[in-house]
Image 1 (tube, rainbow, N blue to C red):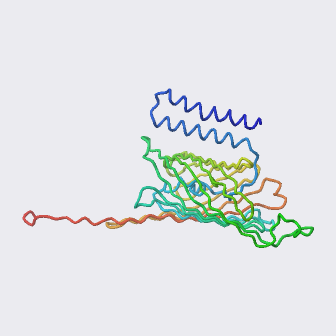
Image 2 (cartoon, rainbow, N blue to C red; image 1 turned 60 degrees about the horizontal axis):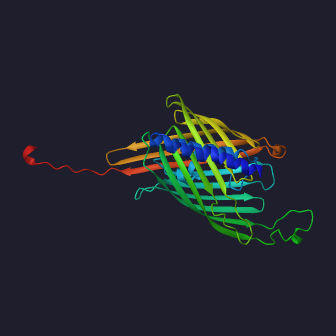
Length: 354
């Protein structure tokens, strides 16, 4: 009961009071919006800290900050480039049937109509359990604020499928337990994700999102995916102009039964090479390295821009699992592009004035 009372106090202090104060003040609209968003983020992060750290139903990635649209559909299309990002994570190396997760995410501006698209596919293998998810989403960006900050709203529809194998290892006859599937059981469901995302390019970003909003039950298994809440934010500090930039990132996620928080700090040199470290309290410390290369070609009739990125992280386990596993390997690969045609402009002149 005390937990819910604390939640009510946090709700009143960080959500209701800022809104009431906002009505009475004469701040300009942009400052009011920023203060309101800060209040939402503060409330969300404080609620997150009330839960214990544990594993999540949704997949875990250390290099999440390389693709914000992966966990917040509203971030789709915030880059001028169409992005195709891939992840491969081999978790807890050394454990039998440890998690192996692959994810492919693409997003970009639609062009023919306002807004951006997002498409995602991931496959997660854990023991005898296999999870597959496909998502299709849309994000719409509102008119920029006077300072150049933009806000986007997004929604995606997901198809989720879960499968169990039958190669169980048990000390007794597992076939007598009716809770354990007796065959290759498969069940699926359709769900919805929502998100809100704000950004000032090359300076800061923040976002809130929710997955499994409908909590649609996998009927054949009597399993309901838990609703997950995400809060993300980051800020870039220019150490030496554009040549040396310190980037900070924070991601907190919870289903109110378990919570995980990721802190990341990395430095990028000359917009080409970066290195840093991530920390997930109670789980792992992760050194990270990456490289990117940009190609731009421009002539009278076309403009081509391509960006190649690759990253690697190693999660050194800090939990009790370090006795059984040395850590986790994660690879990130990305291709971003923009191809535009420049129409040829015909010029007409009167021969008399040639």
